[in-house]
Image 1 (cartoon, one colour):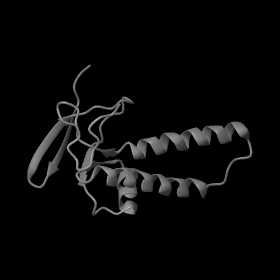
Image 2 (image 1 turned 45 degrees about the vertical axis):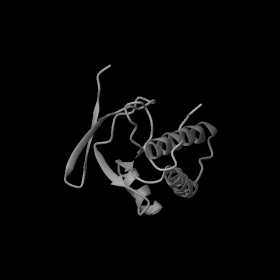
Image 3 (image 1 turned 180 degrees about the vertical axis):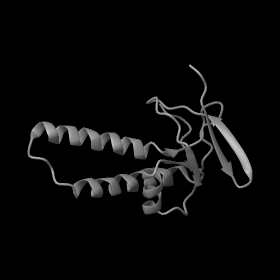
Amino acid sequence: MTDVLLEWSEGAIRRCARWRSEAGVAPPTRVRVVDDTLAADQAFRFASEGNGLLWRSDFHNARHLLQAIGRRMERTSSRKKAPAIPLEAFHQHRLAQGQRASVLGRVLIELGGDYTISLPRAPDDYT
């Protein structure tokens, strides 16, 4: 397996890190460094446009942002009329699940070399 690098800029500094995705997803082509000042509506728009959102603030607030983006996705999918054919409804549901996972997967955190998270209030252990 070859190492794939994710590159971004923070201020005037160009940075990169090895990309790791448990789902085998390719890294985003554009990365925005974000924190608590980013509104959920704006985060949803950025992620829907394909931007990676590299989180640089409190860990628990990142989880809140993910929940807020998920709610916005539910609102947009609930506006669509459900098809009358069960098989078509199933396929639309699966498509919506894939889109949801894709958008939520664009909220990124950086892991240290020992797989630790250096964000405030990040958990120490994942067991």
